[in-house]
Length: 370
Ligand code: NPG
Image (cartoon, rainbow, N blue to C red; front, side, top):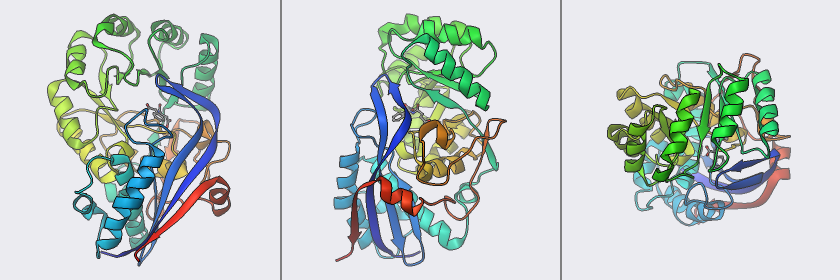
């Protein structure tokens, strides 16, 4: 137990190595909210996975900033002696906003673990010191560019390729990649761009031996995902539809998915992510670690999670250089065998480099008890 002395918020922006296009939009830069929570014993870091616009989810940077500034941070500063595990109760009066809540939960937990000298991976019950990595490829301008990118990432060692798809840019692109690489682990991610009337697209994709098709339908359409899963052979994986362990249990029990993408930032932080892991494991359903183009802070958090036992498929935990010419932390590197080391130092095991953090900061605010 410790008291929180201050919460420092920063809005940071980093250039991406190449624009990232999905069915809902294109990102040319990474912009996110970072929180540094200072307790009586240590300081910890949390990265918010929201984006500039409320497109992937209803949350977005400016909204997350206000929810933290006006509701979560005041509740935390008023909570007295507190632990990360108490925050669900401390934040109970704030409905929703799991990405904003995750930022603070993760930062406080990081501070606690740093004070104890214990790594996040060990706290979560990680079983590995390296994890298998995949890579997610945005919708490319042409099939040739896509194939070039696939070749490049395979040469680096990535163990699974995920292709973003959208209506009209799907079956033929997947066919081209599959013909060039008959044996790789290959998956697709629709980011909710299709409707139940598109079942023919997914039946066609069944021919390519995909590892999964991720979030084909609207995020609120869990029942329709169950119908679609009964019509196709390929396993459905849900991402946007899963905002909690309760969502994951319900989706699996309904037959809406056979694989779950765990993004700790989407479900309210690593503690709820661990519960998602557990409900899936109890049901014999594998999970894997999703990504939101995180800086090194969020990447370190994700790697600790991805080392838990039921993370049985390669995650979107790619190397820093796949995203940024210069990350906020020391860069995360992919080994030639397609694995990455799980940080083993106290807490998340990394910190932003001071000079880099200053250079990337657009805005900063310090929240303290009056
Ligand atoms: O490697 O971090 C990564 C990107 C993985 O494809 C990825 N993320 O829908 O899962 C997604 C997508 C995403 C990225 C969504 C950024 C929203 C923002």
